[in-house]
Length: 216
Ligand code: AMP
Image (cartoon, rainbow, N blue to C red; front, side, top):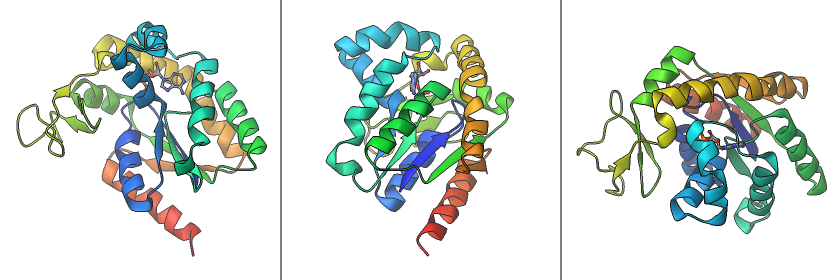
């Protein structure tokens, strides 16, 4: 099962991806998580992308494609994967299609997370992430039990550099210009399913229903 979760930053893709992983035991490939780890480690890649990410821009396609090529050939991806945050523009989607053809693989579904932009700004500015396991929390509607400590692993929480208000606005602009065209792209390929993402629980259940149908 090969899936793409498509949608705005703060649309709940990461949270739903983790639940899908727990349900179907398929690895999540989040380019954002991979890049943030590289920044944290101060690796060559991290140093190259840090500035772009902190401004909310897109990292060059060649870097992203190298990451993806490397990752999907690993053993744990042989029964599929869930892309969270990739592809982000038409060029990346075309490159993915080519790569899938080379590997004789195909994408089963693209789930588009539909959510109001006003809701996103509110969600992102109150989002906090666990440093250790990268689970997301929200100060307003999904706080941790203990202040500033992850419920699952006890890790410290932090606010992502790009979750500051000015950067959020830029990320939404980039999303509107570069990523929204993928909705039409995948609709034409008959892969698109639009999901109401105003509540992540409902989004998860809607996707699960579609995927359970696949196995009947
Ligand atoms: P995310 O966690 O998906 O919101 O990604 C955080 C940041 O990482 C984005 O704002 C981009 O700077 C970068 N990024 C993640 N995925 C991609 C991608 N597929 N293409 C380009 N840049 C990306």
